[in-house]
Image 1 (cartoon, one colour):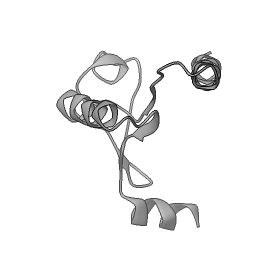
Image 2 (tube, helix red, strand yellow):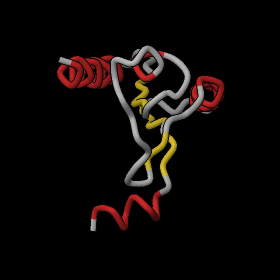
Image 3 (cartoon, one colour):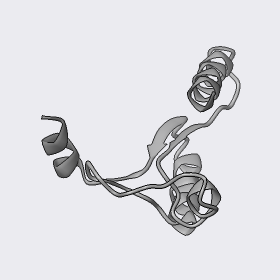
Image 4 (spheres, one colour):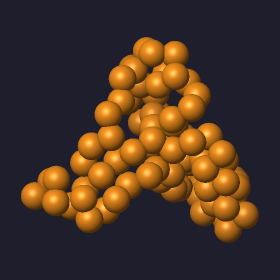
Length: 88
């Protein structure tokens, strides 16, 4: 259901952009200090170069994206070299 909800929101964002409406779509990596990781509903181990961001970092990056009118962004902590090695 999580993936389906995200797909719906991505589609809604594209639809709003097509109508000329202001839209921001944020694709989040894992958050370290809030939500499912903190309350134990999800276990996360950094791997493939992907690590969790602290809420302060998430809000800073979101503010930067909004200030720069970036409408569809990935906000995540990724070591791209490590990620590339892990996928081959």
